[in-house]
Image 1 (cartoon, helix red, strand yellow):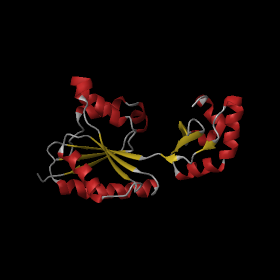
Image 2: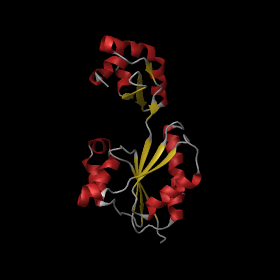
Image 3: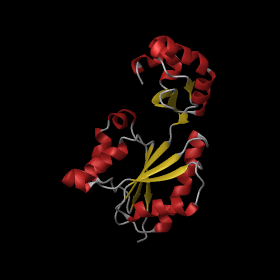
Length: 214
């Protein structure tokens, strides 16, 4: 969006950090935004007329924006990783419903939970198959988001690049399936987390699920 640096002046300091412009729809006539909470979304909708007036005033007669679409809610991303030694499907599937429940408790029912994971381990496969088996309708609030390693483009750095991309989605939790206490994240994933400014600033909560059965 043009004049994005003036966003706080447009929507107010209280909303600027909670509602962000992401794109123009309807051939540039609709402003689409992303909100971090239902409360912020609803407050932005309440002020829509006032905010659109400020946008038109700022841009002038060239302003094509006529509507403000109700804000999408920022999804909750949980980064799921697992040791290659974890092969117990039930141990993985026992944890996933509780993670979904905890997400609803913390963020409410209106945020979509995205289970972000790779495509290499049994844990990755179990996560994707668990979500698929639920056969949830669109908009049910749960998604599996596998991300493969692009070896054709990045060669020997492919895993590192993929892990950095997963971390860049700003997960709120890292869920690790391991076989023993003290087992750590894959080296490339730990490096990606440590190198991300957001993760270094806020810290990324982690939860380890120990599977002793093979």
